[in-house]
Length: 136
Length: 101
Image (tube, rainbow over all chains, first blue to last red):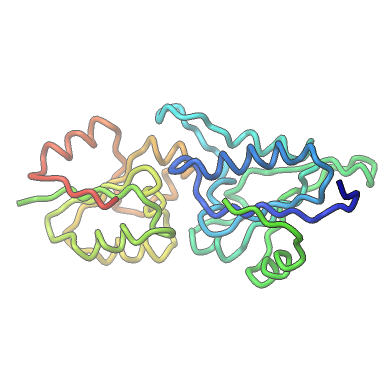
């Protein structure tokens, strides 16, 4: 297998719970984290709803998988790009999202934000840089 | 004849809510549930359409709001938050149910 590290991006465009896409993506990301690649996640369109804080599924009898996003930092998945326009179209701001952080080993384990809000144009540029894209 | 229209798809991904609003006549009711609850969030283009629909009563299923982390204060004014028994009552009160899947 090639030693070269590739840039992998997982693109999330679906809301959680209504379909299985969001959960499946999260599972694939966690499995994929075992392979030493440069991983990033993109949240756009309804995908931004996956990161909304305060999810409580007790009354709908489904598993609340939102706490799992907190674990991504421990798996070196530290780049979560959230598209600004998608948030705005849905009446959301960064404050409506879960605070997700990671400890930067190259900076004395300083706690840093994993979520980076980017414009649609910036997201397009980030996508352009990738080697492999996974769509959910 | 009164109709309960139900919408369970996100208005940002599918046209179900738009179609429902185009067909819902005065005196009818619209219930948003599952991913349809995203239509009840304040400050969106969908919220404007709900405000413009005169003579239609709007409802949203509370447990689906909670599951998706949408706080009650984020729900468009005039949209009533209901529980499962009220969902059943709405289905019973109206003459028929039209599901916009």
